[in-house]
Length: 320
Image (cartoon, rainbow, N blue to C red; front, side):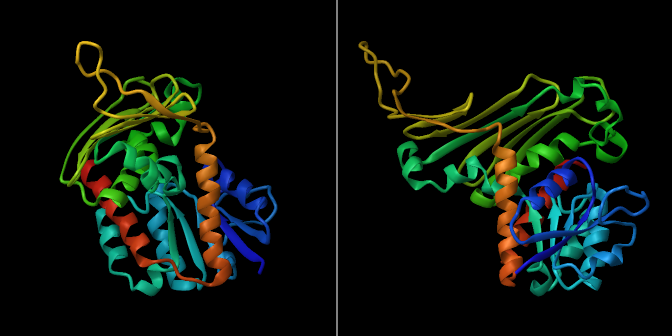
């Protein structure tokens, strides 16, 4: 079956999705929609109704437009909807989406693509987790110097009026969603956003500390630091670290020096991982997951929809 797809959006992340779709087998990109710009590209349209005949529509437009497009498509369109995260920007929109019938929820897929990333793979890898024992703490640190690049001040990421918490909504949300998916609701939290580069009115740096029922976690994200991708899982009997394109496991806890004092556990496993390509890989896998449902005519499990709303709801609560 050839899947006919329409895309809402045409540049930045939308362009990344368009490029990936163009390399997928049996996929035809039929329409690229913008509400008012006359785009000098094939398949461009300013009529949303031109997308209604597609098998699937991708919403890759600014966050604040998601709810309007979802509502319109659910009312006029019979196919599947792939919507970028976060789903919506208002609590009232969360409430309206939460009461949709399962039949509609099953047609909508929210792209939390790090559900297909390295950390999710580790949290599902019982062999490795067994070496760590019961997890006590997870730390994620993601940063680079985007806030100092020319043009950042005029971008949507720096626009505090419309995207004050853009670093949290764009980067941290991936890990918040993943942790809530694995460990359930957040019991307590501490959130500290700030504007460090002074290049725009939105926050460019944020620390989010989380307490779940059984573990604690922290997520640090920044556009105002050197490039860094580091993940730490600390268990009762071992440590897993991902840094500098390497996954390392240290085990066991009861490792002592000649004087009988605790010392760092020995390295028992080392593996190369590609953090630089993780986003592209996870996005491609997420698209494959979506396309497989469209191709087979299978509805998505409504729990995926509800879990996406749960992390979105929590994000809106802390970003008041």
